[in-house]
Image (tube, rainbow, N blue to C red; front, side, top):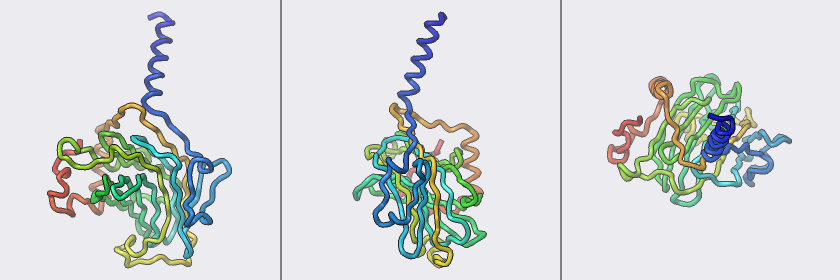
Length: 271
């Protein structure tokens, strides 16, 4: 192949790759709206790369992106509040608006010092939820930043921790006539709030305000928009890792909690 042909081929490949995905680094100064109900509890770095949300007895706090997205990968680095955090709920999630909304959730449920933080995941489509899977985290999410990701495309939703998949939810619109988020763009949301009526041991453990403020730190929110149909293929290593997480760390699976007619997708192999 001539040098000019090689250059044309390389340029074509680059063009194709650019069409597939465009990654955007979110500026917390310019690209998000701070929720009015807790704006005094939000701190943003001067360069817009990081943001902290805090909770005290007066208020929690939160933010949302100004833009909406359809079929993208969403990455954020998050460090939770350390020590006693029973009753504290810290979130990173996607959502559309309205009663028939779609939603994809990471929710971190606090605990007493020395006990594992719980990661609660859920998916809503056209206002229907009942897709909860919950895990005891196998690391301390307050010691350092960890990367949390949602990959959302027409085929599946993948929840990831530190770039490793922990959960896969497939689209069963065609084979089972089940709702799946395909039509409503969603914004990115994050928040910290008082959930001590349910979050820790069914609400039996309450927030201890002597440890307030509780502070969650977010940085490097990146959104990769898919401009073409792009799947997220799973390797055998990925599948083995998901199986390990489910066997060793999952404490709640919606497939075991509802009547089979309500969770028909649970009888279909994931891979």
